[in-house]
Length: 124
Image (cartoon, rainbow, N blue to C red):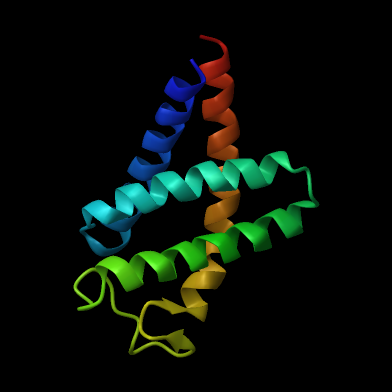
């Protein structure tokens, strides 16, 4: 049963990440579903550590940024998925400070969604 719940949470995170991209830029890439699912599960795990909220958000933003970098280095070598080269404080066009900071409020929303989804799954 635990694998089923984790799978549902992964799906929620992957779908949410892709929906966010659709809303912001009108399209997404399949790899973003996988990245979103992994990030969602990790953000939920960070939340369960019971650190102060500010620490949870900073750690979550750092984890998402790191995973975005790793994903970019694997699937975005030609910059066809995203391209931050024109933005200030970017690293190899794969990550940039602006988006790293954006992951802070997005991580808060993900934590809330994770808790709500987990509660619903526990009722079943």
